[in-house]
Amino acid sequence: MGRYARVDLTSGKVTVGNTFDLVPEEVMRQWIGGRGLGVYLMLKEVDPRVDPLSPENKAFVLTGPVTGVAAGLEAGRWTSVTKSPLTNTVHDSQSGGHFGPYMKFAGFDLVILEGASEEPVYLVLEEGKAELRDAKDLWGKDTHETTRILEKRHGKNAKVACIGPAGERLSLLAAIINDMGRAAGRGAHGAVWGSKKLKAIVAVGSMKVPIGDEQKFQEVLRDAVDKKKQSGVTNEALPNYGTAVLVNIINQAGIFPTRNFQEAVFEEAENLSGERIAAEILLKKQPCWGCIIACGRFSKTKKPWAGIGDGPEYETVWALGANTGTGDLDAVTKANFLCNELGMDTIETGNAIAVAMELYEKGAIPEEEKERLDGVELNFGNPQAVVEMTWRAAYRSGFGDDISLGGYRLAKKYGKPEFSMHVRGQSLPAYDPRGVQGHALGYATSNRGGCHLRAYMISPEILGVPKKLDPYTTEGKAELLKEFQDVFAALDSMVVCKFVTFAYWDQELAAQVSAVTGWDMTPEEFRTVGERIYNAERAFNAMAFGDGEEYDTLPDRLTKVPIPGGPSKGHVARLGEMLPEYYQVRGWIKGRPTRETLERLGLKEVADRMEQMGVLPS
Image 1: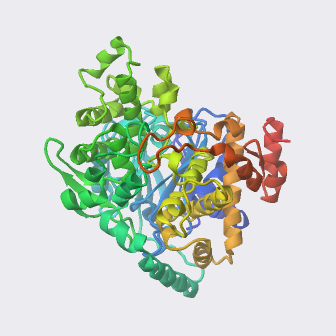
Image 2: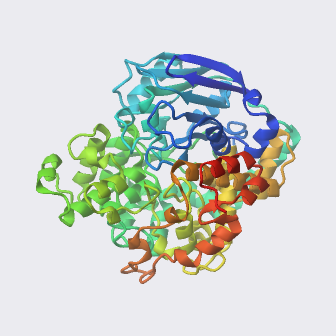
Image 3: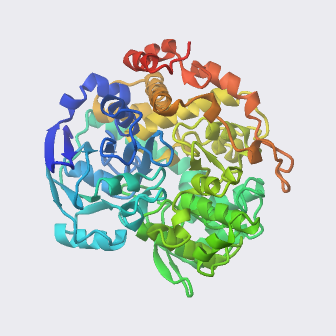
């Protein structure tokens, strides 16, 4: 769209500028947009050692060149990039819905949020203009009420991204919620907005997204639609049963983490499945803008857990369900609705509650601290505890204040850090890495902390896409993981949904970027963009806190304690067999990129800074 907004929240000054004055087109081609452009700007404008909740940290709200161009490319997404208060890493969090395309329709490619306001404010983006407005009347309200007020105030075409009570209270579970049910969830980005007193961004507009080569674009669009129709995942499984179609598949593979990763098969998994959701609580599909897959769910639960809203997703029914030992679908979905309304990441929330339950059952919470539970029994399998602790965490009420710390800090507070299943302080998602070796390596080497979306190795290791691999072997996994990480980094910069990769890969993605931008990007160049992004992120982290091989690991429970039962019984994550090869194919030494690698990727200035700070490997 050729336009960005720089918002100085300290002074209240908003500057609108030309995107290509900020980032020349030849530089943009090296990063594409979204996640890539975010880490580029973080390296340019933010001290890696900054306190994430200080005014000196910045938050970037970004689209990509493909965002909002047409239905059929699954391009209804946007990206938040900042330094995370949960992980201390450079961190991107992606969200679907409608906000991203409407930010483009309002005329903007990105927003730079810097400084901190003394009073609550919100930002309006409309037809190429940007303005800060008073949000004191919105402070304290949940995300649903905030959205309804702003939609009424700015018209039916207004799309809202906002924080709730969790973000206002700087909870490390805090997400940014858009469209009342979509979340930039991971990494506590909502707490960064809260620290800046930014309540919301409203996007209103009707501008058309430009396309570089219309004829080529129509060709790649038809190709994308045809290939998604040919995929059983994108044409049948996800549309019919949503992301929770994975519940039974992952449980039957023996890698469905249960009761805080103490087990890997959940006896009540069927109660949480996509099939059960469709049969009992589903009201309608809830697709993102321009999406033909339509995996999103909109559901209604019954008493005593009555509610209505978006979800639940696979990660959510696992985190708030199996991981807490809870098989009550209505209760789990109610907790999901609360996370949406109060502005929280369901994955970190479920993990924190599961850690609390293990602490409680194993006697690690002192009696005087139990008084803050207000009579709630924190036993695995207690649906009341899951719902109660969810809302308490948002408001930091009673023991909820401890839950709001996230899984790792909660476990550490009570002297049991080994109870937290995390990487770099971010709790793991819904796959036990002991039974999927490539995925285990992906967890350990994820630049943003515990994450399945840096490289979804579940696709080849469990689902057989593009081909079936033995999940228990380590041979060849390092090289394939690097390819997944690089392609996903570039895809996150377009910005499009990762589900398209069940139907096509880098050749089609590069062709889409080329058609929209007018560039002639090859698949090789596309992968190199992703490699550049991945190395830039690791370099930022090395300068931030010395990131390297000591962080490329998993908790002892996952590397030393075998899965106790089920199809994957007896397995542990064998990182030691894969990390040396991974570092070799990455061109890293001890978990950090070398000067040779960085300069090959056009990152000489980054290498120089690393050397000055004493973190460049020799």
